[in-house]
Amino acid sequence: MTTDPRLRSSRGHAALWAAAAAVLAVGSATAVGAAPLNSGNEPANTGDSRDFNIEQIPAHVLDDVTVLVTDAGIVFDEPAPFAGWPAEVVAQSIAAEAADNPTGSSQAPAASEAFTLHSNPGANRTIFLDFDGHTTTGTEWNNNGGRPASFTSAPYSRDSSAAFNSTELLNIGEIWEQVSEDFAPFNVDVTTEEPSFDDLWRSSYSDNVYGTRVVISPTSDWYGSSGGVAYVGSFSWSNERSPAGDPVVTPAFVFSDALAGGVPKFVGEAASHEAGHTLNLYHDGKDSSSYYAGHAVENGSSSGGWAPIMGVGYQREITQWSDGSYPGATQLQDDIAILASRLGWASSTSSVVGPATLLDGETIVGTVEQSTADVDVEIVVESGTTSINIVPDVEDSNLLLSAQLLSDSTVIATAAPGTASGWQLGFTEGLAAGTYTVRLSALDWGSTSANDLDGFTKYGSLGRFRISLDVTPDNSTVTTVTTVPTTVGSTNTTTTSTTTTTTQPPTNPGSPSDPTVCEGNARSGLMGFGGQEAARTCFAPAQRLG
Image (tube, rainbow, N blue to C red; front, side, top):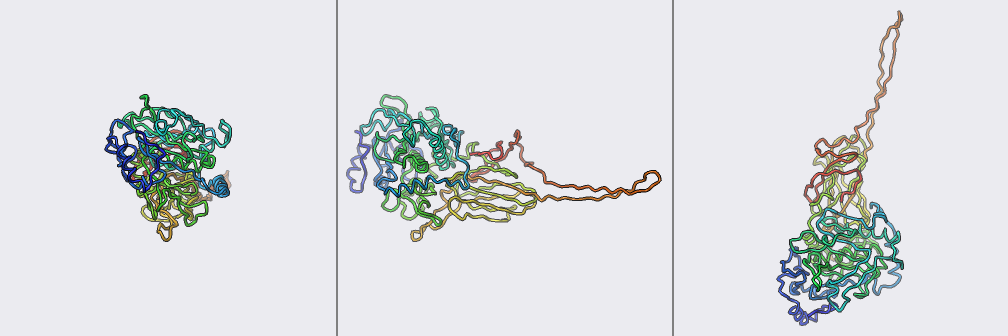
């Protein structure tokens, strides 16, 4: 028996859910589509990825009005963000997101790179953001609810043309940048380049290379009015096959036309949210609401503030993974622990290794992987005025950091952000020649008290930062006057010579303890992330390493 996937739960339907449980429990001890709350463990291998036991789903999840049930698992059906909203509110939101605020962010990928972007190409896990259209055949979407045996999703578009224009290509880069920031701490490659089928399909639970496809398309007529849909836990489904026995991968979907016509901020939020569902994350709600739309923060405005990624963050500047550390939270899943258990940490691959030392004139990109551990960056300076600048690497950053400048274990200076988003940290100090440490720490912001809610905890403050070093040396000019008596013929004379010497500090002093030999302008180094130390690697100044 196939249950209508549009069936919705409610507190008044306990008997219906009991009956559904009896029908849908097909022998799996642990539901592949839905691990128990707070669990990050792999389900037992039953040999069929679609085995499902509704009794494994927490009651409060089934009470979520966005939950749909099929015989393969549960589906989260995301409402469109502007359904029923006044037109002027929609217009204001779109205008706010269209405004460019690049403070502290690196340049978004070029249009020419739109379909070759990778966040971590060495990873065994893949999140493929599919923008150029996809035909879905033989998957759970086709097998449930009387839907077509095959349907085609059109390419992402913000106009009536089937061809990608330059704005759409830039939007693809912005969306990728946002999703890759959300998953930066984890060992997963967020990519816009079509991977091989084997890189997505998991043949068995012993297959360690697999992933998910997130189809980003205006086409939603096959499903209905929604902002996006995903099967919970489908990222790890193994040996998935069509009714005809062909291997298939059930994708998640983001319906861009329902997201203000494909505004990058909204599409990026939805893509990370749906990918989170495929990795066993449920909705973050508050009190009686299935979704939590977040709250303003101390420096917030009508379009600012904070929200959990698994809530709804379309209107919030800061969105982060959450553990329910806000008043009235309906979901206490440890998002980060669950994601790490399924993906691993990013520091296990060399593509995110950063240098241990930063030299004059360099800019490097590093990753804060765990908010409970500091990140130390060693800097080598000559005597002079030293300027250090730290900013988020992307505009839609998950990071909020404070910084300390240390000489050995002595704190010389501290820096804290004045705003919760678009922040910059910096030091300008007259330093003697030597080696110093910049210590970066995740930061709580404001209050999370029910009576004074205007902040968020440091739990989800993860992601990429950029740090640069510039030293203006103390140049010393010494003038030496030497008087030398000489004799020319029988006449004694005195010759005076003046020598001016300008002493400059050595450039690019390097690190004598660094045994790695690199070519050209590249050099070697390492950085510890989340309390771990990664292997040395060669890199060039200002190179993005993650």
